[in-house]
Image 1 (cartoon, rainbow, N blue to C red):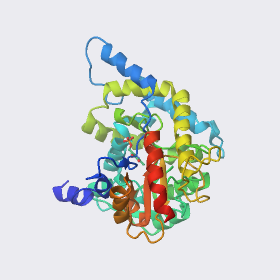
Image 2 (cartoon, rainbow, N blue to C red):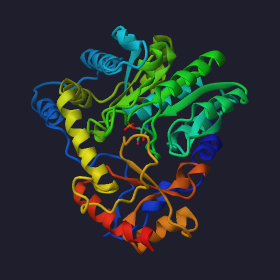
Image 3 (cartoon, rainbow, N blue to C red):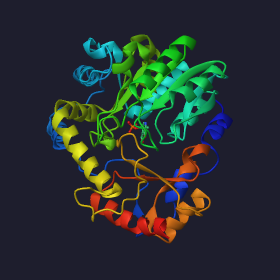
Length: 398
Ligand SMILES: Cc1ncc(COP(=O)(O)O)c(C=O)c1O
């Protein structure tokens, strides 16, 4: 890889997301960060304490991850995939250990999968607007990121994706993200099935980034494996969002063993293995998943109610989100159209920050089709969110 390729992949200078925060007034409320703002669950805290208090060595872990953690991820993914009956996939067998890759965050899983499966000169289909890492990783591989649009409400639009796939040559990999960053959109079972079928037809590796899936408010969103089976592609999960532990840096990829095997080599070369204390904390989190995820969903539900107007306590929130545009509330992002006459989204985000005292991310940071929007993170501490939303509301009322 040349230095030029890296420069091309990441662009010169700080990213738009960085620019949104750089130089913010010290009293600005930060609603730009995409991470949970509630405390690390006790299960993880106690596991980390046990590691700190244990006598003796802290060895490298096995390259393939701590066996108990791999088992726990396999069980978690199998349970979550079979717990709901989307079509005929409720009888799925449990994942085997070679169908799980434990990684240093799902970010490292993405990196390893791209390096393993994306050839220079090929195409990678990525959502626009979408998580900024996807096109960067495609360019790092010397491939072309080709964007596909989402539905107007931010959900996956399978027809649009399949149309782009049909006219793009040499597509090596297709990325889905649902619930989505930044739009919060979800994917219907039929959309997932259609995309899986189209990818299989052209031999493209399908990666379904489902790191926000457990953070739902209205109904649990569909997942690729439960709709189309494990052979349909690789599903990404993480302890960073619903498990409330982004600093652990533990994530995973679940999918066909033959797709994970080469990615595992890349991941091992990059990290040797995820940090052992983090893996032990992740194991504890998965062991307490029912409790941890129920609590996380309560945190998210409270935040959504605050942001979109709580029917139970209507005086609590400014109700910024345009009603009726979402198919389901999930994830931690509010995707707001700018008020009329607001002009350029990056300039508007800077005004909101410097004059309004709230840092948000301009939609164009996530791709050209994100223009005219702002991403507001609901993830942070509740008091900050409440104050931040109070400061934002008048800008939509002018
Ligand atoms: C859509 C999406 N995928 C993956 C990641 C990476 O998460 P992690 O590496 O913490 O698991 C993020 C982080 O913000 C994200 O928003």
